[in-house]
Image (cartoon, rainbow, N blue to C red):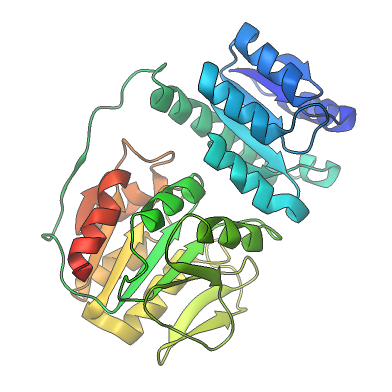
Length: 338
């Protein structure tokens, strides 16, 4: 994989070169210290993937991303720090495929981080090539019925997502009207310090009211409560609760924890959506929802950046319907009667 680094910090570029240079099949073909230089090098070198900082002199990463995507689209991952995480998510609106925390020296020495980071680079580059049209097709796979039909009325919607999730969640929520009659709970695997910026970014894209979940916050229609990066999001007696229990399968917030908690409260009147992501979080919850008579909509492979979680749910028999990202919002609207 041919990579272009765009970051004004020589230290960050040096750390990235040291890390990525050890990986077989990865080759850093260029470095740029500002967005304008990055735009020029992207057009000239045509890398498989660009790693882009947000705050840079001459031209910031958001404008550079926008210009690259308008002229000669390429897969882009944006680096950002937690104090400007909202700006980082704005880069997704400009065309970037993923936002990741700017790495520091401690993370560079963490094998769990480096393995996960490498997986993200591989998946984003592959998905980006398909989305942009430079890679082999995965097939249409536009969606199909699973164990159920269109679904039935529901009183609560729960959504889970991981890698690739921000843009997928934003798409689903933007397709729902402000008068959507049921409350929505959202668990997104997210780094510490990035949850507030994520919620603010989602709130700008939809007529729904999006906010970070608070303790004992009442569940009301037309609202989306986002799990905090520090807690599992659960519900009881019509209110959201913050659970500070241990990580489940290395995830906190856990999608399965939220799905199963909501199922105890709502039973067959629960609807779940499972979107793109690595691993299996959410699969058991989807299966439990289906078994209790609820409805689950699972993102299909063709539209998923990473098909791990949706695939696990499908293989467990936890998908009422397997749908493209474009189809999920409209199906939810029909199910809710709006």
